[in-house]
Length: 325
Image (cartoon, rainbow, N blue to C red):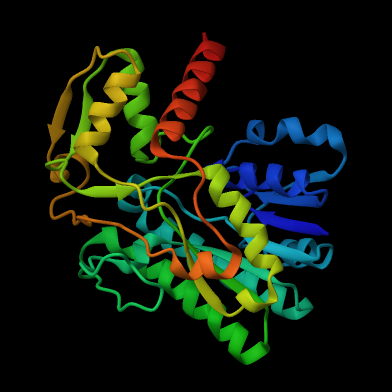
């Protein structure tokens, strides 16, 4: 098998490339390096089973040629991070919806199976937890830029399912819940690498809001083991699956745990949302996935716990900071 992985030089994409190669398959990576880094996949070049193409998923002729050469597609290319969404909303919407439209049209042309990565953000402000794939979604107003990402990802899902219905395109959709691990940076607002970097420097850990909001963090290795398995299962096509963890923790408690593991020199500093982002910023109080559906389909259950994630991220940040000095 040869897979086209869009966004393959990104954090999750690079780990997915490693996973696919470990299964004996080949990878064609398409990435414009706007948020990804070639360094993330440079170590995979020597084996001869990975090829990198610099380019955008909005380039229809390029995507068409890449899709034609491959047996299946995993579409990860997207705008990422709350900060980017707040600061560059036009880029966010155009990248997500425009890029997915191009990828799906190309896959439909050649009937290539495609896996689309969506996000837990599509559940919006729903208070019905755990989140089930068939649940209603609750969105904030369009005047709050924060919700543009959730709505764009939801449109991606509608478009993918429309292609499945109208063109019989083999599509699987996954909603990722707070994927974390080595190679992720805090540049776009990701909380764990930001906390870890602050803790290792002995700086205050900046907790946004009151810190009582809860999240479930998933090790990237658990995620990338699930994605090829779902794409390979014909019975998964035309369906949406949550991919995540159910180990729930408040952001405040997470900060305390990071302080413990990074030497205990830091303190917590609470920052109002309007200071961290913009006036009127909305956030979800809880984000807990129901994993019943994916467990029934492929037996998925996360193997790695939060402390495994934190130790791996701490080791990775230390390595990168040492290499930079």
